[in-house]
Image (cartoon, rainbow, N blue to C red; front, top):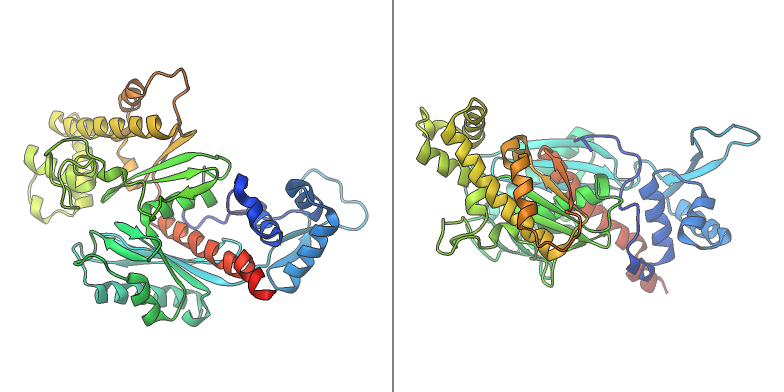
Length: 418
């Protein structure tokens, strides 16, 4: 998965065991979207329903403007008689926006109902905490800029999803705390909906990066996996039975705020001893300022400083190497805890800091394995993804698509139609 990549199909390729509670019409639509292009007979076989039922349901979806017929272009089969017909999500049907807010820049994408990204945009910002009004202004500016790139009236969007670092109460859509905001317990969704007049969904940014892996990346065929992110903070998302797990209030999986040192370093959440305070960008910057004599250190951006630290480590600077080695040991401890608690099939290390291979060097991953409880099981498969910021926005777009699909085809829609 690369930013802006034209994918063929999106969404989990394997459905959760509990998917039977979803209306069959929704299951059919989501299966077509996941495969990208598929004949009716395969849909019937995969979902274990009769071909006649699939024909009826797909006819309804075509009439609703959600699916369309195309020639089946599967390779390796001879073209005899009438061309075979396949189904795909109708190109350009509906538009949703996904946005990611962060310390250094905000990013956004617009995708259609098939999951195809049509355009993207970036809005740089100065680091520091924002007021609620400033955050709403930034979202509106980025929304209008991205829509203008596509020539789309913002009112034509069918939904908008936003990823933000911090603690998001999914039940109430209250942003309990974020390193980007000056205040706590903010109803960001209500403020955005009042300004933009669109359906708004908000989630922790690590959850949305995990959705990006589930919809577009290495997690599409894996039932249970974890995504650990290392950037301005440390985050985690977890998929159980092909579904994103958020906890009772939507605020679970806060790996960065698990405690690794009693009365330890101060974390930006206000507590001490959090994993993030030893592994995130600001932790490495703190160590560099203490250990290294870098010129004009106060004028260097965080990225410039970390790049300089990394180059020194690669050049053999012992102090720089020690900083990454220490952070790598804390990462090994965190990954071992994830493996011991959840036993995932795969752990994906993701985020821009994965460019710094010292963090996940062979000795780091080996130390993780030695700290795992010896049960005779294999250790989780490790994937390293150094995606740029745009993939987080794609995860937000996946969340918007989930919500829109539920509105169009979900159980609530069926009950309302009765």
